[in-house]
Image (cartoon, rainbow over all chains, first blue to last red; front, side):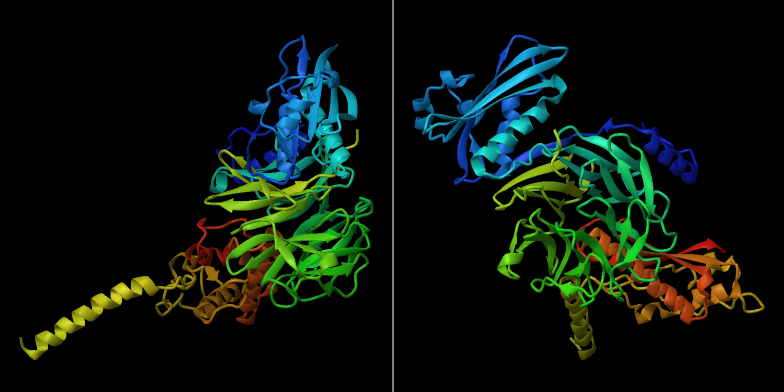
Length: 442
Length: 169
């Protein structure tokens, strides 16, 4: 959709690009390369037998493969490699349990796919406990063949919840920013993809920096910061229709760091038109601004506590950046982090208990997690040395972050125990600012 | 070997040793401004003209560098503040955009704040030297527009900067 526009004056090109970004519907984006690194010996062993297909054209997706990868990157499960699978039952009655007991598998998933007409297929699967020889789940889906990955993620979610008791978050989406090209020829894109990095779609494109995407709680909109007008501005864009609203564009100073309130009615933002960078709560419908901080320091990177009563943010009011907490109505702030030279960019888990952040010590920046019920101690989820932008999965089973590798920036999805890491990289560009979206509605 | 020759040899050795050890010890330093030769006498009335932006040794310097996580203007940049402030006084229609930038360490949004603080520090210094607030605007790019992309102090020191951009001369 973007044609080379070198001959135009930059201002004209910018204006045209802005229009193009507005008119563009979802467009396929450059795919991410996906690798899974590490593994956990203590993870629960599970076998996902390739789903049998009864007739019809070959399917674009190997459903069992998608489920296996979901399990492996969760850190909670270790799925038997496809090449080690020796028998191929497709329904419970055909499972020879001694075979799988011998292979030390705790659970087995079998399934079958049949043509449902009109380009759709019917997918049935069963989950069995190998030792008890007991059926745990038996479900069926009907879906277009183009949505088989989505079905596979939903199956993985159901199995994950049945065995761990925790709702699965594989059938979710992530947003991130890509930068492709060098210098003035860089194109920035806001992309939405499946949680495993597949099916990337372009939401917005710009010749100037895009940053800080934030999902609305209903998963329909993304707030983000764009420099396309020259200065920073905050937009909210509907990811299905592509329509977008300009939310904050004070000509003077920074318009940055949007974060949705849990009920979706407000955005916490960082604005500096008042002379210094301060936090505000912006009513999305009326645009009414409520100032939350009043301090000569840099106050930015707000994020709401899940109960909507308070906001965590970064401030350097004590000298170096640290995490603070302020009431959602404003007032005095309380310092939250005391360990580490500096801490910034907080991300709060769904239950409000875990705060992930970027902790910097010397020149090493790593993702640290503080459990609020365990005092100020942190554990590190990433190796460094320039890691950024933590974002929790909606069930806090995994966390996305950005990392710097040589000249490139890439993303990692790491299991909450830090044991398994999935690398998401662009073949010829930078990926940054990951944001894990909310649960999807069926 | 007479004494003079011996002294000269020792001196040569010292030079060699100093050069070697210097290579190992050299600490990356923030880029310093070029030494400013005594500013050439401007036009006969003592006021700057737009042509001086290209020719005057001081006015040609338009980048102010900062220490890590710092926003104070270092003494070596005071002379640059003074000449650009004088230009603003001499040319009331002149206008400057101050672009604040940071190195890649730290988070993107925090660095937007830090870059703005640096640009504000330059704005304050220009005003303290006689520039008018109405001639100055400030924008922060944080770490979005690095001039150097390696992950080392030498590179970082080049990126921690505020650029003086004349939008009207």
